[in-house]
Image 1 (cartoon, rainbow, N blue to C red):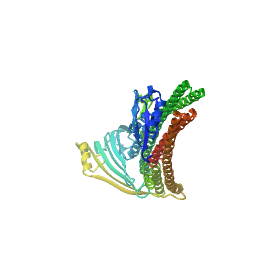
Image 2: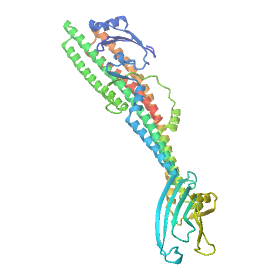
Image 3: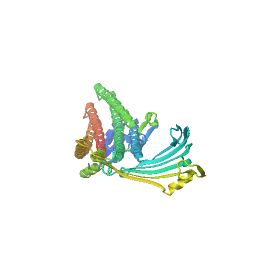
Image 4: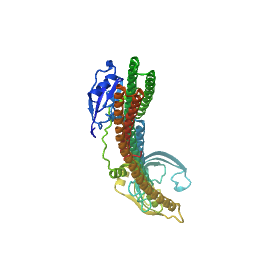
Length: 558
C-alpha cells in the first residue's frame, strides 16, 4: 500500500443501513465473496472508490458518504459552514455583546473625565432696594436715603489642559438710582471686566489629579478594548471547537449506525445459514446480542450529537428565541488534515507582542507609572502664580454742582447712559492689575513620601509580573505545540490501526464465507473496526482542537 494513497474497495448500497466493505487488495474473487454475504435485494448501486488517506475525514470505511466529504443538509436542517458559525458568534454571542458594551462604557468614561477641561459659564441677575436712615448731615438726605440697584453679571472659567493652570474671565454691571443728594451720577451705571490666571509653578505643573484621572481613564479604555479582543478570540476558539465537536459527533453517529447496519446484515446472513443448517442457533443469539449492543452505541452517539448541537448553538445565538435554537445544524465542512509547519520561536514572539493578558499587564504597569508620577508631584511644595487684570467703567446722568463746596447746589445735568460705561471700558480709563505668588511648604514627615515609596514597589511588582507572564506564555505555547505534535502522531497511529482492523475484518469475512471462521470472530472484527474508526475520528478531532488552541494561545490565555 502506498504511503500517501489508500485504495479502498467500498461496496456501499444507497440505503445507509446496508453497507459492506471489501479490502484494499480484495480483487474480484474476494469482492464476489463479500457480495455473496449480502442479500441480493440490497446489493444494487455499488461503487468502487479510490481516495487518499490524507483527504480530510475521508478515511473511515464504514462511514457512509455524508461522513466522508462535505455532507448535504437533510430537509429541515440548517447547513452551516465554520465561517458562518464564526460570523453568527460575532453578531449574536451575548458575551461578546457584553464586552462591546464594556468597551463603549470605558470610552464614555474617558469623555467624562475630559469634561473637566470644558469651560463653565455663569450668569447672575439681581435687584435690590435699600433704605437707610439719615443719621448725620453727610448721609445725603433729611430723614432717610433710598437706593435701588439692578445688578447683572456673567463669567467663564476653565481649567487649562497644560500646566495645571486655571483661567477665569468675569463681567459685572449694575444700575443704581438713589435719593442721596451727594450723588455725582443719578442714575449711575458701572461695569467691570476682570481676567484672573492661577498657574502652578511647582506642584501641579507637570501632572495633577485631573490629568492623572484622564490618563487612567485612557488606560482603562484600552484595557476594555483589549478585553473585547480577548473575548472575541476566546469565543471564536470555542466556536471552532464546538463546530468540530459537532462534526465529530455526526460522523461518530454515522459510524455507529453503519456498524449497527453491518451487525444486522450479519444477523440476516446467520438466519439464512441457520435455515440451511450450516450454523447453530447460538450464532443467532450472538448476532442478536451484537445488534443490541451496537444499537446502544447508536443511542449514546445520538445523545452526544444532540449535546454537541446545544454547545454550538449556545455560542452562536443571542437567546432561545433565535430560530436556529430549535433547528438541527449540519456541519458542512471537514477539517484540513494537512499538518501545518509550526514555528515555535516565531509563535512565542507573536504571543509576547499580541497576547491580551500581557497587554493588559503592560497597561496596568502604565497605570502604576501614572500613579507614581502623581504621588511624586504631591511631595513637592505648592507655588502658585496669581495674576489679575481688571477694567472699570462708570457712566450715567451726571449731576453738575457749584464747585468749591460739598453738596453745592445743582446747576444742571449732563445726560448719559450705559454707552458711557462701555466707552470707559474700551478706553481703559480705570485699569487695575496685580501679580502675586502663593507658597505652601509642608513641615515634618509626610504621608506623601510613604505613598510614593509604596507606589514604587507596586510598579516593580508590575514589572516582575510582566516577566512572569512572558515566561508562562512561552511555557504554555511549548506545551500546546507538543500537544499538536502528539495529536499528529495519534492521527497517524489511528490511521494505521484502522487500516489493520479493516484488513482483519476482510480476512474474517472471507474466511467466514469459506467456512473457516466463526460468527464470533467476524463480530469481534466488526467491533474492532468500529472502535478503530471512532478512535481515528477522535484523534483527528483532537488534532484540530490542538491547532485551535495553538492559534488561541497566541492571542489570549487558554
